[in-house]
Amino acid sequence: MSHTHCAELPLDLVISGGGMAGSMLAYVLLSQNPGLKLAIIEQSAELATDQQPSKASFDSRSIALAHGSVELLQQWGLWQELQQSGCAIKHIHISDRGHFGKTYLNAADHQLSALGQVIEVEAIGEVLWQKLKAFTAQGRLSWFYNDAISALKPTAELQQIRLRSGAQLQSKLLVIAEGGLSPSRTLAGFELKSDDYQQHALIANIGLAESHQHKAFERFTPTGPLALLPLTRQRYSLVWTLTPEQAEHHLNQNDTGFLAALQQAAGHRAGVFKTVGQRVVYPLSLKRATEAARHRTVLLGNSLHNLHPIAGQGFNLAIRDIYSLSVLLQQHQTDAGSYALTKAYQQARLPDMQQVILYTDSLVRLFSNSSRLMALGRNTGLFALNLCPELKQAVANQAMGLNSIRQLKALLTRA
Ligand SMILES: Cc1cc2nc3c(=O)[nH]c(=O)nc-3n(C[C@H](O)[C@H](O)[C@H](O)COP(=O)(O)OP(=O)(O)OC[C@H]3O[C@@H](n4cnc5c(N)ncnc54)[C@H](O)[C@@H]3O)c2cc1C
Image (cartoon, rainbow, N blue to C red; front, top):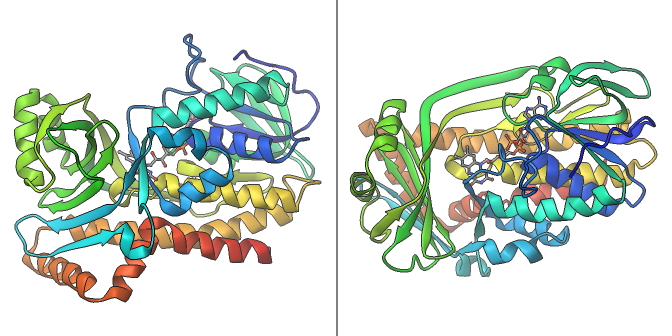
């Protein structure tokens, strides 16, 4: 895809950041609104291989998509092509290393064929890339690669955007989807709350001796939670929370040493680990903006909420950001950046985000602590989940993203 510097007329929307959230938003809005024109600004260079929009976002990670998110992807015409790369989670097994509490969640108990799906983000990138190419060819989507916003000047009617390359854009709405670090978020005057968890996540794909039978494992170890998510081709996607020093140690171990250490931490219920792919380490923090919208500007995806991956909620939340903006744009077609739209977006996103942050943050704090008292609480908690179907239903609904989508639908119809 080539640079297209043709945007002199005001655009409906400019998206800064062509990663998972920004590209998916562009696809959803362009496919739902035939007259819409938009531009994406992406700081990384266009790839010579013409394969993916942004290697920075579409890396070797896998993500768990909640049942509710899969329903939205189906509605948007994306799941049909993605499903061949997805692996269903039919059971979730939660346990605490060295303690007796365990709980199981089964899709069948909720009359579902799957609790969620695990998918490699590269597969999402490829599908979006192919779809966006068609819009670029039609002249409805312009890309500004290797570029970034250098100045913003909002007026009553428009957002005036200057880029590092010297290009100038005018847009009714600016969507900032630049990931967790997002310099434009600061330029636009948003404030950020930030907590560093002092933990790192080690990510890798693990090959198994036998089938995983669509089971996901979440195990709480003294260093933090360890999650194994079922992937296609008899593999698990591993997210292992560790101290920075331990993460460094396991990153540099040889494959045999690493697999032995992982097997010991995960236990044998998850199966016998045979191979390990590329290992990558991410520092973990919780960052969230105090507002979701300002004048003619909204935040989306990790620029709005950057969560600990313990509960696999980050991109699911981004999918609901996209859903909210798409519904609101249908309701406010004459002006994509009107006060009514940005206000309704903020009202739809903040409560959902706060709920997920509270849920994720309590899990991190509860399960990253090795004190006896906390372990007792955890085990009682896990037992309680098994014994009390209502509590278990609440946890399953949160994991499947069902509560949030129900609440959102109600909120957006009132907007
Ligand atoms: C280890 C790990 C495991 C995870 N597992 C799950 C999971 O199981 N389930 C789940 O729902 N979520 C999960 N997540 C979260 C998920 O990965 C994020 O929600 C998702 O990547 C957010 O996408 P994004 O597009 O907002 O940000 P990013 O992926 O960070 O993309 C931002 C894009 O903006 C570009 N950019 C940056 N700055 C600028 C700029 N100034 N100008 C222009 N472009 C810019 C970047 O190059 C990039 O292309 C996980 C995250 C991690 C770290």
